[in-house]
Image 1 (cartoon, rainbow, N blue to C red):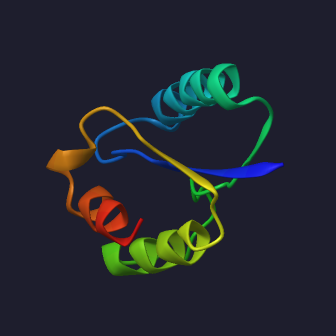
Image 2 (image 1 turned 30 degrees about the horizontal axis):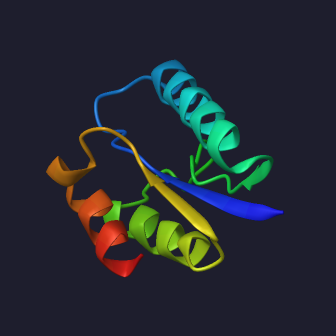
Image 3 (image 1 turned 90 degrees about the vertical axis):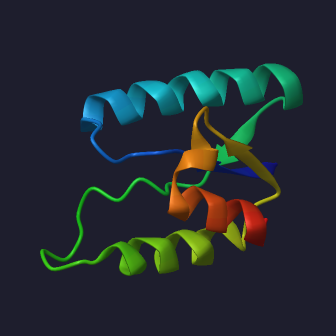
Length: 88
């Protein structure tokens, strides 16, 4: 089974908005490629002092295990997503 990494802007979005967008993305990918294993790159339990670079480091680690990467609408406006795109 292919592993899916989702790169999406998260700044200024609620957890519910992020999860809803991820669910829509998963549906699009499954419709196109069949079943996938979604890599959980939405960090809900993080150190209280985590800096943006911490999140990016963890994301890149997870990205390295992906077979498919989906970039959500607006990714090009966000530094972290642009870095993930370059690495992918």
